[in-house]
Length: 298
Ligand code: R5P
Image 1 (cartoon, rainbow, N blue to C red):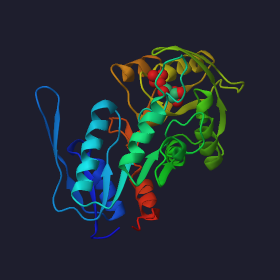
Image 2 (cartoon, rainbow, N blue to C red):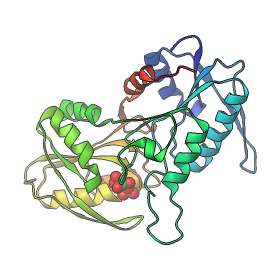
Image 3 (cartoon, helix red, strand yellow):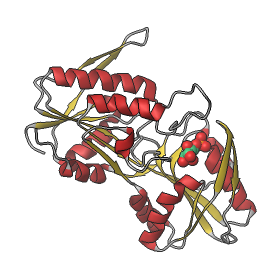
């Protein structure tokens, strides 16, 4: 990237923006934001804008942020941006990928097309793509790149706990578990999970000996924390010595951190896709590499 590019960010993501700006050698500019008493948002972008613009916005608490992204992207185009990239370390609305009941909105497709209409390129980390294999199937824009934090989390787990047993709390975590396990030769296994409600999940442990082991649960998202909590209770009942948690997106809504610790989790480790007290692995170098490989030619 060069003088003809800028990284736009919102003030609540300053830390990640600074790290990404350094790694990608991009100048930063903050989008000013005012929230009116009725909840409407007013944005002000820096002027003038160069022709290549990168917008950083993680989409946890997604409903407001999707409106911010809409206002920012349309304004950037008005101001002359010719190539617009969204770096959204956490991409929301990917889990509702089919209509489970007649009449349900398939949010993944709707939000994906919404973003594809706004951006030339979208970069994200460990999106929850369950029934499709590429991000472009959800976000049909010219470049839609998926990165994975699993190798970075694997390095961190290895530095903290060399002989860890890696366990994925559900079938969908298999992709991250096998990537991480390959990297350091961890023993590993994957649970099966049935979800009965937002905070009610049933988990079955894999057929892997856990007695006396230091277990690390590795997953993409912790939201209510109940998936990790339920897996932890079973692992401790089965004789695991300790259970730690390593996740990409630390959403942890409400009392989720407490829920996870109450179940017996010792440490929570996460990346900084979402700023959280558990963030200890930075995805900025990964994002910067992806930005450097984008084709931004007009
Ligand atoms: C879904 O399958 C994801 O991989 C996570 O396991 C899930 O989103 C975690 O949600 P919660 O923390 O609410 O159980």
